Image (tube, rainbow, N blue to C red; front, top):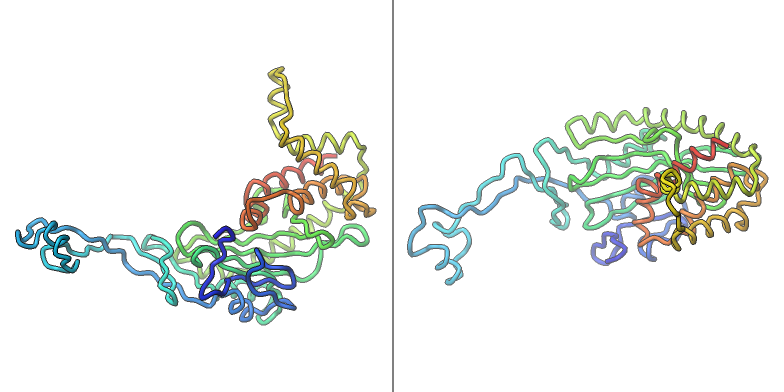
Length: 353
């Protein structure tokens, strides 16, 4: 299942507002959903529980007539005396969804479950209960990973007509594979580019571990709102300054080369080694350059021939042109993976013009 979207009884656990869902799956809504609508449409209305983990342990003093081989031969039930006992594994619990019984993973005793509805409560605490802000939500695999994006009020405005919407992304896992993450991610309206959230690494993210304090931390949603407000003010100033800085064609090409090649070129220059540009790197640079000069969004007053436009060429390529393995890989790379790091670097470099 390449899409990896959780499917229960033929229904995909994904909802999206207006935009086409991944692989044509899921429910498409006409307007932003309320918390309850999003939970139901995305198939997230299930409970998660945890139970102790047991393992079968073969008895030492086994009855000769019911030894292991004989039990296997005659098909004796596993609870037959003298076959094995069920022993509890200390400090280990299995998480599972109660509607299907599907197991998620094994966690420790300190692991606290955060129900899907609590994740939406996190957003309601920020914007206000009942506000129609949810735009995508879904579950991956068997439901062990969930994600939610919610649009916040107001925009970041660059120049007179280049608006950037503000979103919060929330991800959580039920299998113990990772912490809860809430992060601020601006989206450029005119071309749906995913932009970096801040100059400082991880400044736009809040991570919460699945421990006893998890629910108390989720109640502190106002701290996340404070982060997004500060970052919005910071980014408004940064982006508008970049839009005022004119750059030459050579500066643009040098910028693209530095972003794509990273430290590789610098290391080879220092070592006086011959540098041969790979076909892959050459194609990436060519596509970014084409985007920079030809894409309609690059013809705006704020983007044409500016540092802001150079940065937008990077985000535009990685958001709209680059070919990813699948949509989940794209989302992961853009928001938390290698592409996020590349765009973070590209923002820092663009501010140095």
